[in-house]
Amino acid sequence: MPNLKKIFSKIYDKYVAKIYRFIFLKVNSKEIAQDLTSETFLKAWKAFSFQSSEFRVQNPQAFLYKIAKNLVTDYYREKAKIQLISAESSPIIDPRINLEEKAIQNSDLELVKKAILKLKDEYQDAIIWYYLEGYSVSEIAKILDKSEPATRMLISRAIKNLKKEYDKLVQKI
Amino acid sequence: MEKDLIFKLKGLSRIKPEKRWVKRTKREILGPQFPIFQPILIGSLLLLIGVFVFAQKSLPGEKLYAIKKITERAKTFFVSSQEKPKVDLEIAAKRMEELRQIAEKNDVKKLPVAIKEVKEVSAVAAKSLKQVKKPDKEIVQKTKEILENKTLAQKTLGTEIETPLDETYKVLAENLIKEVENSSLTENQKEVLKKAKEFFEKGDFASAFLKVVEISQIR
Image (cartoon, rainbow over all chains, first blue to last red; front, side, top):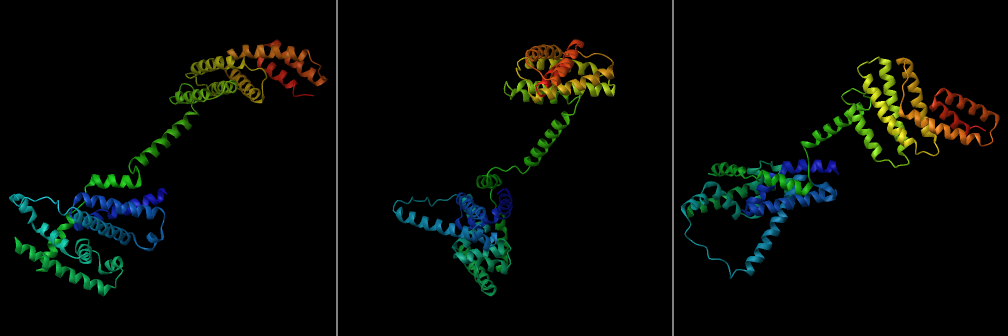
């Protein structure tokens, strides 16, 4: 067990920032990203400490992203349910946003973040892994369980769609 | 331009979790870890063990001797009243052995401290030994060790070493001789009793005690 802890501790150190970033870009909230990241590693640790077949078959990177993706999906599913219930009582947002907030919201990075959020899941993943984390096409293909040509195609479509969404947001300013 | 967008995308790698949160979460998942303290802790523990082991070989007047005495005192603290005379006698035997070593080394500086230590622990052992009704093998063995080291130390120093234990051995030997005299003895036993009495007459009470104990082992 101490040895397993040591190994998992290294896995944690290597991937915690990447998983956090991956989740944060999908949920756009520090608190939620923290919650889902810790849940990802907790689930991974349980699987790792019991040496489950699921963990042994996949590499840690693919396994962690798989858990993170599922947790994000669950989060949005729950969120949709809550919004459906409380749609009528949703608060009225003050349209008068101050200039400082507006400047932050319209900064390049914020616009890129917003544009990513508008993409469908697999495009988001491809953008984050390929351009942000610098994974190779073959690494992404392994995580997604796709062929390399199909992955290359996905990345190409993803960046094109991101550009479209980004341009739309810029035009709105 | 896609290139511009890709450049901006790379800027998102600045998104990082807070260090404190990263550490706290790791601790929550894996439990407490002491990456820095663990080697220090193990090192300190090994050093402590080393000091204790080394202290056991120290002699009166040396720096680590106090640790040796503390360890012995701790030992007597945890033994039953039945076992206490044996442990006290064991400590007295150790002190006598130390005195013999110092005498052999002719370490004049340590000699007064060593004699003082012998007298102190002998007084404790003498008190405990008085409570013993029937001396067992261990008491006999420790008495032999004390006697052996005492004889050698006396020979080296050229002087008599008197301790409170002598008086206790006198009482024990006297009582045992009286007890044995009233029972029927074989020729061999009578011979040993005679030797015991001779030792007693000479004032060598520990030897007299050992001889009279020997009678019960002879048929």
